[in-house]
Amino acid sequence: MKTLFTFALAGLLATSTFASNDLEDLKANSSVHTTYKKIAVHLNEGVGKAKIAILDMSGKKLHSRSVKAKEDLHIPYDLNSLPCGEYQVLISTEDEEVSYIVETVEKEEPAPVVYPLMAYGKKINDYTINLVVVGLEEAGVDVKIKKVVDNKVVHEEIIDQPEGFRKDYKLNGIQPEDVYFQVTDAKGRTRKIYI
Image (tube, rainbow, N blue to C red; front, side, top):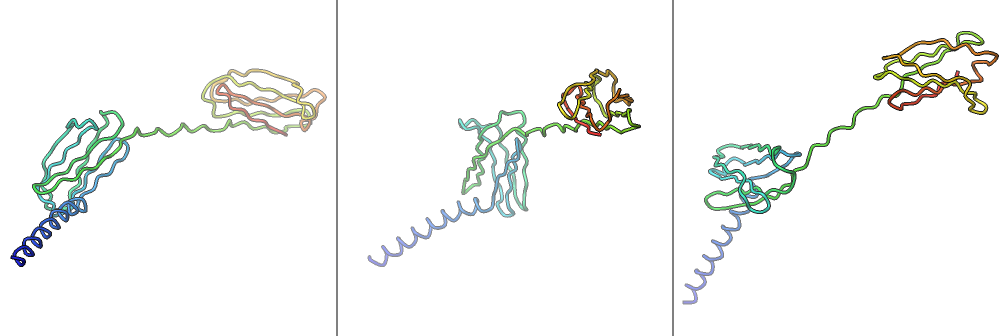
């Protein structure tokens, strides 16, 4: 009787070990990954017939399909039409079932590239400076000529030229080295130009 009890206990332990190994086998032979609002389910070769279900967190089934994994299998899901949040991916075979919780997020758009204002000044002679502004997307550039010593405005004008302009500025009794240009375009980009 004692021997029979030992065999029964050994048999029970062996079947429970197989059951836990089966669950670990499906977990080891499957994976789920997300990228923004896309889910990828991967099943390794040998999983066999399986059912994949996508559920929301309230348990509502959103999609279900049967597959046969004779070789490594990659199944993509696009959830762009659904709101961002957590979803459950349920993979089941005849013997086992495994569940994954995934989270989808919006793809962040890259910030627009803001290029600096391209403005250049060049001394033509002792009383003349040439100013060049290029690459404008909108017309309307505020040009200020200021003294280096006290930042006092010597001259100011708005040039309403699209794309860019070139202009000579004649300074009356002031050396080019004694002033600087402060150029601001319609987008608010500013550049200071010292001669």
